Amino acid sequence: MLFCYASLRMEASMIDWSRVAQLRDEIGAEDFAEVAELFLLEVEDTLFRLDGAADNPEEMRELMHFLKGSALNLGFSDLSTVCSQGEANSAGIDVATLKDLYARSRRFFEAGYAKRFAA
Image 1 (tube, helix red, strand yellow):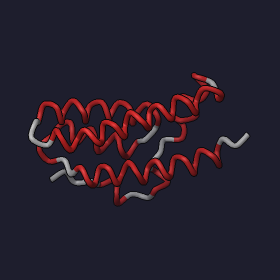
Image 2 (cartoon, helix red, strand yellow):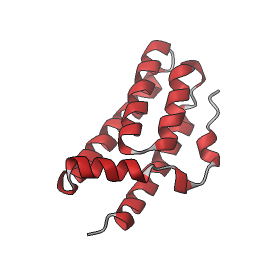
Image 3 (cartoon, one colour):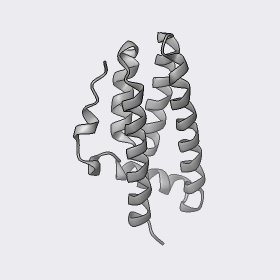
Image 4 (cartoon, one colour):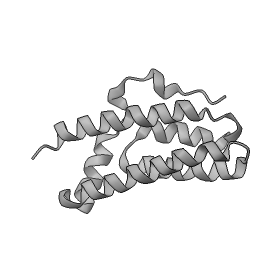
């Protein structure tokens, strides 16, 4: 079973805020919300698909690779790290723990974004 070290870390380290700020600067503050929403929808769809890939290591690796890249892009650093571990060891993925980490990361991202980038 994949060890989820991220659940032991402080929430403050879940999000790479410098990456979030960089992406926001690159695409513009006006378009950032749309990009973030698309990311969240794609990640949630992929997390849903993990349940059906439990018996298919290759599909699981591909899904974990996608999640890793998406998480890195939007600064979900802990999620990306766990997905990288899962990509390397697709047989040891604890999907429930991964989904929980995503949910906690999303809540922390949404709360932190509003505070950090308030107009």
